[in-house]
Image 1 (cartoon, protein in one colour):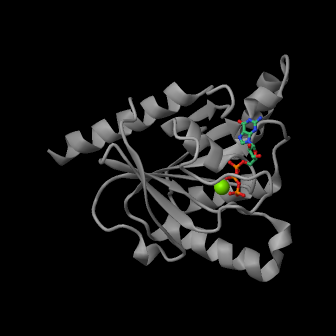
Image 2 (tube, protein in one colour):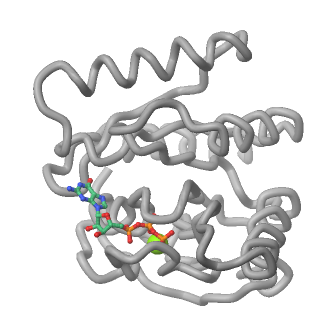
Length: 203
Ligand code: GTP
Ligand code: MG
């Protein structure tokens, strides 16, 4: 799929103030600093669309970007950033949870996992919570360019093995690098196919 237009629409903390209408949206979530905003820029080919930072906790709001005038990308704040303190973390958690549970337009949630690390409890528990709530999601293993040799494959396989302990069916997953653009075509194709199936169902 070609991205012909990508436009920032609105930022807010309240799911009720998100854009009205029925356009499908695809949201990006994961731990702070995992590379959500960078991935959005890579997918859209717009380097400055979503704000990125080497300091965790950059994205604090729900950010809507309108793509090709027909669907949205949503950049969400990261979870698990200890320096926000308990109160700050709880506030962000409420923003994220309300969005995920209440936003009917959300068609798929991409859960980003840093491919360099072993399975982390916080991510595993977050995905369990998604499962319990029937939220459709897929996984993106990020920062693949940072791993050399066979380590990337080993880490991804270890992750899938860990998930198989709990999940009968493993959700679709992608491997990405915002530096090398690895995963771009696959992720955009996946979104395009869901968009197509939605529009067919509406006819
Ligand atoms: P918060 O909004 O703070 O939750 O973070 P985020 O998940 O949006 O991460 P962001 O995209 O801001 O990236 C965090 C840092 O990781 C930045 O310094 C990025 O340049 C770097 N980064 C993100 N993706 C990649 C990647 O694929 N490869 C490499 N090498 N660095 C990356
Ligand atoms: Mg961000």
